[in-house]
Image (cartoon, rainbow, N blue to C red):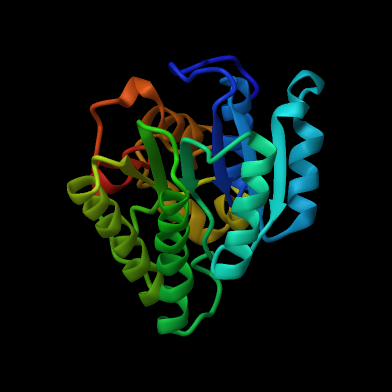
Length: 250
């Protein structure tokens, strides 16, 4: 994810990427740096941000800003957004809402929805209220779960469906302020699913994926960057599954 595809971005413009310390978020941050953007990488875990910074080539490090932030906490979001503005020279034009709890975390339904959906709505509203430049864009990481298939976790399916519903609301009613889209990753080889492909269940599920494997984080990042970019200037309100064809076989 350190290639130099620019996607039509203007060099030096900025993006906030939440959940940037690992997995898909880290791949998005690295890809955005490769596209010439300034990146404000947010994560709840400082160690993940340190690992991200260590992977950034030396000639791009001055364009990376990091913030330890719990996006479900309004005060933490406000502080991180203010710090980001100082570091990037203003409110970033782009936002990637990638942070959210794993489906494996045992959360009470109402609390999970507050964290998973409320944090995305809260940060998006905070960012819009701060006044991003014209032609702003936001991409949310949803899931095929809740949108194309059901899962054992009730809160996870409900939350991911709600994220896409919120994206469609923004696209339909706030297109004067931003473009809003979402992707739906299938099974992706991130730390959250470490060892899954080798498990009995993993073998059984991957046998139903036409491409025969899990996705890689960068294979989720490229579609996110496209949807965010000026190359997708007429794409608004889209939910894009990125699952190797898994859900068309269900």
